[in-house]
Image (cartoon, rainbow, N blue to C red; front, side, top):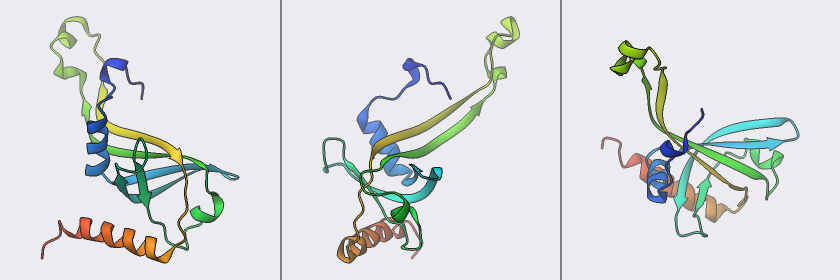
Length: 140
């Protein structure tokens, strides 16, 4: 969707909030077979690098790590809150009939390059952190 500049979110803390609040990232890659999207729970490490680092885990059976070599350009999309906006909500619609429907939404597109960690200790640490984070909200 076209986003006019005055609606674009540029505050880095807000973008980070969306990524943390909605951590299921859609990792978009382009390989030999074209575009692909994998939905992956992500951990965001703000201290890694100038813009932070996104860390996710895929099962060994997921061919992502085979079809996309390290250094592959990627985009991760995080989708936050969203809602349809009816033109009938605007008083001017009754006067001018010039209002059109739209959509309010929160989304972050993070761009970077793929790094693969085929290291059991690294993977266990990540899976443990992701599990603790998401299980914390579950009833005891």
